[in-house]
Amino acid sequence: MSITSETELLGMQQVSDAVANVLKAMRDHCKPGMSAKELDDFGGDMLTKLGAKSAPKLTYNFPGHTCISINNEVAHGVPSADKILKEGDLINIDVSAELNGFWADNGGSFVLGEDINNHLPLIEASRDILKAALSQIKGGVKISEIGRLIETQAAKRGFKVIKNLAGHGVGRSLHEEPSEILNCYDKYNQTRFRKNSVVAIETFISTKSTYAREEKDNWTLIGDKGGYVAQHEHTIMVTDGIPVILTSANGIWD
Image 1: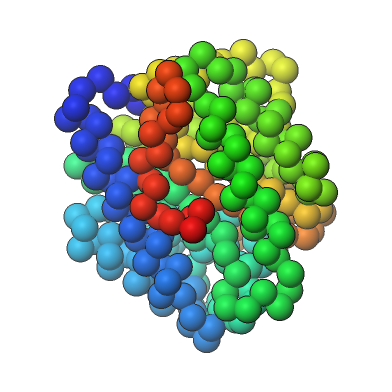
Image 2: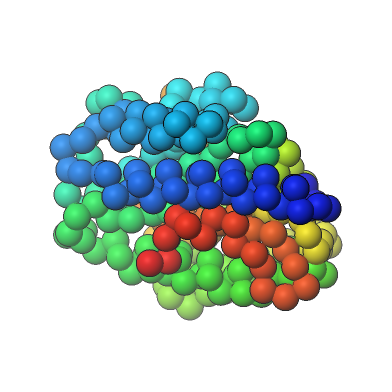
């Protein structure tokens, strides 16, 4: 969507605060021995108390309030009761929701407890690259150039990117135009960011894989060549300068 009034900006900020605060609370609540469903139920209850509705449930009838991906799962992980979280797990939580007709999306990867499996370099790369990408986004910038930046920065750190997952427009629904803000350079994409538009920018930084494929449950995505992936995501409003980070309350850069 394109924000054209203070009322729209307020609506987007309210839903963005909701998903950001739920993401932060879920990360803080997460403990070894807990099931993914327990964690998801905690997040779902919090969304309800805030008056928000789970976006993946509303849009896709997803079997969970949030997406919780663990270890080799790249995205869209189903928060089932048989997924038990363990010390050192690489966990990604993605929270998106609708509130009063506005939609926002955010996510982040982290290590549960002590980093016994050395996932932190990957996580830090994903966080740093998202920050670098956002610093270059403003009205008139080609979307493909942000993809080039993400891919180049990942390579400099010895990582790859997932090329078939992307950020997207958001605001009046979960997925809007521009539909593909890729993590790689696409010379055929001549689309530019527009001032006052709302987009969800996300990194998918990988140790081995370059494409995600769907598992038999028809939801969970894993890498085509194995390894691990870290994702971080903010919903932003594009401006003539530094974008407004609407989901800044999630603390994924803390």
